Amino acid sequence: QSVLTQPPSASGTPGQRVTISCSGSSSNIGSNDVSWYQQLPRTAPKLLISSNNQRPSGVPDRFSGSKSGTSASLAISGLQSDDEADYYCAAWDDTLNGPVFGGGTKLTVL
Amino acid sequence: QVQLVQSGAEVKKPGSSVKVSCKASGDTFSSYGISWVRQAPGQGLEWMGRIIPIIDTANYAHKFQGRVTITADKSTGTAYMELSSLRSDDTAVYYCARGGSSLHPAFDPWGQGTLVTVSS
Image (cartoon, rainbow over all chains, first blue to last red; front, side, top):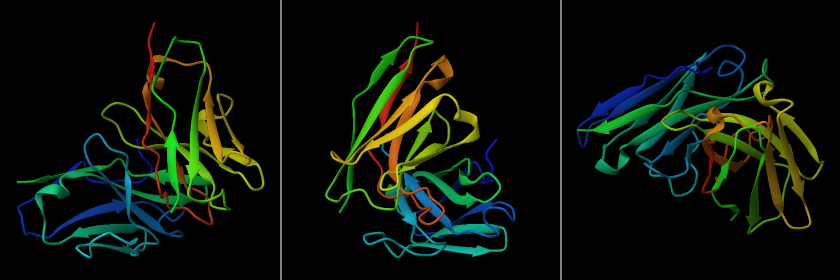
């Protein structure tokens, strides 16, 4: 049981826009920044979004993040076949005094 | 540009210990810290703990306290994660990643991962 809640799956067709949600509480998302990670099959996770909405150098602007209250979202526009991956959200948790992850969302490009 | 390179796959017996290394190149250890995150087969990511090498302070997730030890050798830029009393459900890919502290919570970059298999 993950501290942050994500839908287990999401899907879209090429060119579409999809969003993935991440729900937490006042001790994590409600008071700290959210980061998002992309994990392609059989590879290590890669940072996609930090500090709620900041893209590291090299991450396409098709990926965007937002946060409101105790929830966050990752949006992917212009969906491509190589976006098919698992996506994870994470945030610091003040009560647990450590970072926590969502359970991950498997994105399928139809 | 920091790169993290981990040691190779391990096969261990139940009850034994494993020690995985993570060497940083391209930059020296900073105040970011080095975290260890594991991923059991078909499962999600789980934070185990973190060390901030410049102050030699480690913190652990409650679940792993007493069983995991994270250390760092500043002279070689290498962090280590040792997990003891191994059980079959410790079979997982273990990743190191820079970050995971309250000041620098995002994890970037990540090592390539080390598969630890616990089997009799």
